[in-house]
Image 1 (cartoon, rainbow over the protein chains, first blue to last red):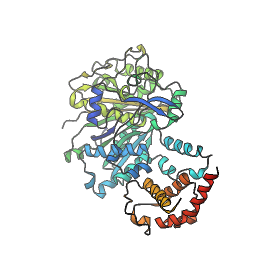
Image 2: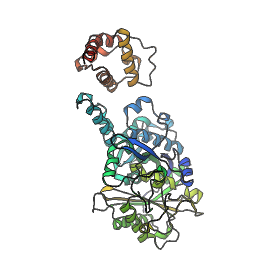
Image 3: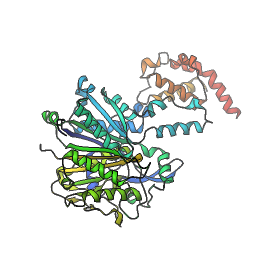
Image 4: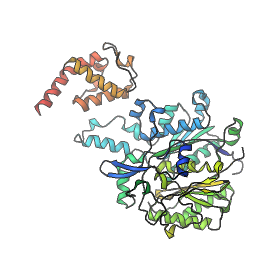
Amino acid sequence: MPDLPRIAITGVGLTSPNGDSLPEFRRNLLGGVSGVVPWEIRHVGKTLAGVCRFDPLRHQKKKELRRGTRAGSIGIYCAREALLDAGIDLASMSPALRARTGVYVGTTEHGNVETENEIHEVAGRGFDLSFWSHHHNPRTVANNPAGEITLNLGITGPAYCVGAACAAGNLGIIHGAQMLQLGEVDLAIGGGVSESIHTFGIFASFRAEGALAWHEDPAKASRPFDRGRNGIVVAEGGCLVVLERLEEARARGARILAEIAGWSVNSDASDFVLPLAERQNECIRGALSRAGISPGEVDIVSSHATATPAGDEQECQALREVFSDSARTHVNNTKSFIGHAMGAAGALELAGNLPSFADGLVHPTINVDDLDPACEVRNLVIARPRELGRVDSILNLSFGMLGINSALVVRRTAG
Amino acid sequence: MNREEIENAVKDIIQTVAPDEDLSNLRPDLKLREQIELDSMDFLDIVMELRKRHGVHVPEADYKELATLDGCVAYLTPLLAKAGAKVAAR
């Protein structure tokens, strides 16, 4: 990317079904610890989900929790933890910097949870709309999670959500990098959140599609690439990263976790739900080209695979086409541990891989007991972490409904 | 409901709406909003909870009657007697 400032990731705040900080998340990814548990939701009944356990009262008052949304709460936790991780003291942030800080939160969907709650309330009261909450609109506006973050943190710069189905977590980070490069902001908090396990509609819709996972053992339910995979485990979660222009981050002595090397976003323009390997392939190649590297220089591909029969197959086809000649490239998957964290997925999956720059390990994909031949890709890391020694570049893939594809390349930085 | 019961019912609602507040020293004769943090959305929450818990519909023109705890009790006493009678009649 000539003439544009280089962008660094300097902090990570996250909550995932198997960890509420990057070190805990990483430990459980290397240790094969799942975060999928039994879950029950009205109208659907007993199902499975990835459920987060962070303490929302760490950064919010009880009244804020009562008034706001789960997505807002997850966003607030992640944003504050990300700033702490980046060594940025919120209390001493100047009004000028607060006004030059952008918040870009990827969401798959927002408002379903809150709308269902209100409908449930009035349905029990003969649809008397005098019982419909005055909080409904502020809770369901599409910028809700980003707006709640600004209210809690006192950030006065641009803050909004990026709606991009299950590619949204990547998009929040990409958008933050773009705004820094444009000079629109001096600090960006970007990533994604998901409160989707609290809407029965998402479970019911996946079930209607035949795409909702089930397994007697919850930890084995999310099984991308396995012949016995039977769909998606819905998860909640969030991950926001602090982004800064590399030069400025270095000048303040920040710890650089990674550099954003390149990205690509495109659209299948082919189907509402079915993915398309050809367009994914173009997206991957676009991101590598922008990063100025060849497929053979990618150490880790963090796959999107959600454990639907068609989705995994299409992605593996795209990966074979791009990486079959690369002995160096290893492929893993994070959804096998935590389920599909929707708007948060892309950001969480990237974050889970960032420690590889320091420890040289690739976390695996779990639950592959019987590899589907249609999902065979070179160097798929199964069951146990693989030691690579040195990792220089990671490709993070996130695809979503209506055919949105995103590929994000991050690389190690010296110092 | 007697005066004490009504006052406790109102306090319960305020505690739900303002869960971070300590209500033990709430003065019944002073404005609620001068003693605890309550904004207009919180006030609408109080009105909503009165509707949900006690079947009392407070028209907007009467919101001013709910400014103090004493005001709440005075305003709600006849209404809760009626609502109670309705429940008893079912």
